Length: 355
Image (cartoon, rainbow, N blue to C red; front, side):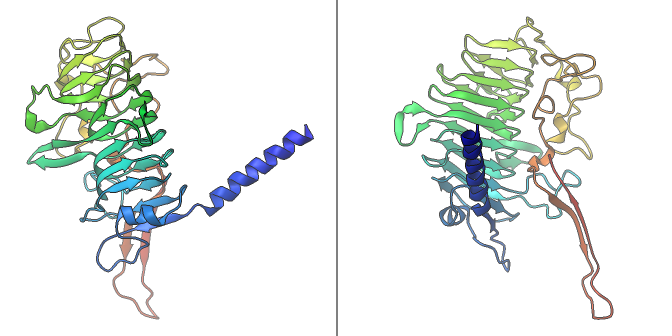
């Protein structure tokens, strides 16, 4: 017993020591701002595995990233000017293409405005990011970004595994190999709007060997293809469903995509499901459920005392407006512009924690 206790103490001390040496890096490319780095790739190259990189809001992209290290990359979120009490600075952190290669296992990104993520590594978490690459007037998802799951970069015969894709907005997802441990939950998933509302373009495409848990997503448009996977509590606004061997329950479709067995609903009028666009409603807020929505309490395992809804705002990891990362945020900052020795500058700051 003493030997085991001593071993436990040594392990805990090792973990504490490792955490103590992890560093947080600041990245900002705005003129006149002093930060650790100007681009995301420079920050990656200068950081050590286990470090955290904070990208601050900027109108200029932080460019692409090819990662071979375990890093957590955190941005401020998106649609910050549309949702109240998000960030005092309402500009997002834009990133181009991110590629995860061998060595990046355990990495996470969150709160970014990113165009694409390509995965050649295991144990990657992609959550609370926006993948919209362009808008066209009131069409906010004119072109959508993509997440691609491939194989391990150091062994092309082994597909990636243990991939978490959660709480993202406006994304297409594709897995081309027999990946396992894929969780796709609480996302807004859509093919490009420029293809048209009746598009059969790929929104979610999984290979016949990929086994995934797909729950509480909104499929805005396009084709969903899955095999031998579990689909629960999803809402298909418009689109098609293909594949075999799937377990589907408590999903809602505007047509007959999911059938009517196992709690699935067909031919649902989507104008009754969501609050929809309108004055004071943000781009991502329009997908909240309307009063009396048929998706309320329609989720798997729902009870009167513990209701579970279909759609991206319910269940274990509900979608978070603006993709605000789970770190404290300054959402209000007011400073007196001029002061003196007899009249100090008054500063008002409001900070909140985020789950």
